[in-house]
Amino acid sequence: MTDSSALDPEDRKIVTLARSARARNGVPEGAAVRDETGRTYVAGTVALDSLKLSALQTAVAMAVASGATSLEAAAVVTEAETASAADRAAVRDLGGAQTPVLVAGPDGTVRTTVTAG
Image (cartoon, rainbow, N blue to C red; front, side, top):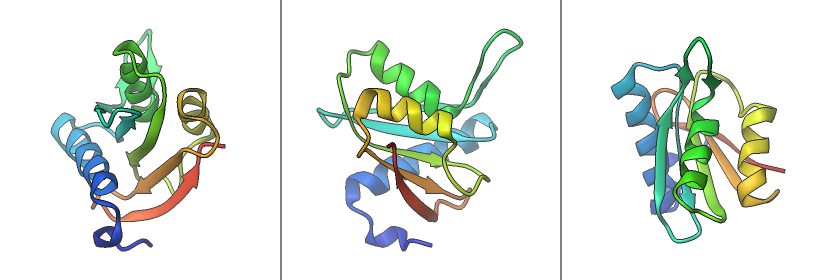
């Protein structure tokens, strides 16, 4: 586990936003991404009959739809041990292979940081 208090304040912020989205919306996952200008995009899991997106995929889509051209970092709050390959691919598509993806548990404790690569 990673000591969340040791995180960069901007990384701690996206973990907190992701955790809040998960709790507020009662969804399995919450995510947040930070673009190249420092703007953040927050989302939860989308589970419609016609559309299924993870929280991280939704946050990346929101960033793209808002004009972001790159990502500095991403965070997902989930029960899963790590970010899925599809989630990492979405981050990689916008941010590049070295973009960090912080994976935190429901309590906000960062379990691991992986790259999108």
